[in-house]
Image (cartoon, rainbow, N blue to C red):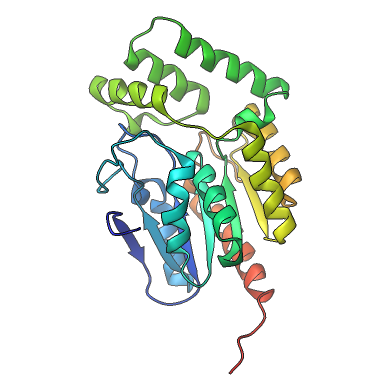
Length: 262
């Protein structure tokens, strides 16, 4: 199922790590751009696998909107016989869908400001953001204006939509993006807890809505919530701190894995 997926690889040995980027079709978002600061982890003994999701980067368009449930199977295939899985933003939903499909293959799960706002809709800051996002889709704005509003609300840097054409394309894809139900989001996280998968949820600390969402996600999933300070939606760009944080987390998760029989 991964034959049409473009993959960037950093490192050829060590425990396998799969990094799933966020964004919706129509932006310049791709795996290597979202996770460029994590290439350094290859020199620390990790085998880093960075796919471009369908319709992003060098992967061809899938002929459908962005859909976490549809992306889950091919990400699950990338886990092979076991890997540490990381998902950022919408990629966090994809990572959860893959984990639900093959929990036994997930050595640990890291979610970076995952797109779980719907699940935390009762939280004050989340409610405010969701109401503003709803207005962006209801009011008769252009696709470009809609995209700009959403980017500002979520803290997405301008580099992912530099031109008006980029913004228009992003605004159109945002309208079509398929998000799982609140019940499914909650169920995915509960299954992580039941499976005993080590879970780390990372926030930038710059967005109150993501802070509330990430705290709830860690609680439901039986994991830990941590802050890696960043001025936007990309705490993974705080290279030194983020890489140390996830490296320590993966090392601890590796220590829990029973040795294979000779």
